[in-house]
Each structure stands twice: as structure tokens, then as C-alpha cells.
Image (cartoon, rainbow, N blue to C red):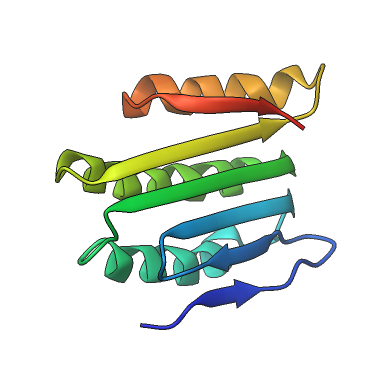
Length: 123
């Protein structure tokens, strides 16, 4: 399994998924076809979750994302939460800019439905 690196564009985030357990999605996520963009991320996560590291750290640092991205991101986070149920250590760091209520509320929503503690970090 190889690392996954996708450079950001005006409509898609930067993605860095490392086999050492460091996962990061940052930037803006407004792709015209969110499923097409996020399917490759989910596929990588699916295989990673088969043999995850003892510690996985996921950094979500999105300044804006559309509803299609929101749904896809939730799908990815659900897969990651499953590894914590297998006894592995999972940390989800949710970055937001001070005063950006939309982004923090979305993180709080994910935290509540996934039933896992997020680390909320002001950027």
C-alpha cells in the first residue's frame, strides 16, 4: 500500500494519507462530482482500515465544503471510527477559524453522530 497525495485545486482539497497513520484533508472542497473525487480517498481508507497502525491521526482542515463533500467525508470518517472499535487509537483533529460557526457546527455534528470525541482546534 502506498501513500496517497493529491494536490489541491480551486475546487478540491489537498489530501495526504500516509501509511504511517497520518491522514490530512485541507483546503476547499467543492468538486462538481464529489463522489468521483472522494471515491479514491474512501478506497485508500478501506484498505488502510484492514491493517491500521496502532495510532491514526486524522486532521480535517477544510475552510469550506459543499453538501456532496460533507456526505463523502462522513462516509470516510465512519470507516475510520471502526478502527477505534477494534482497539486502535484514533484522533480526529477538526480545525476551524475563529468565528466560523458553520465549520465548527459541522464538526460537532459529525462528532455527535459518530460517537467519538473530536479535538477542536482554532486555526
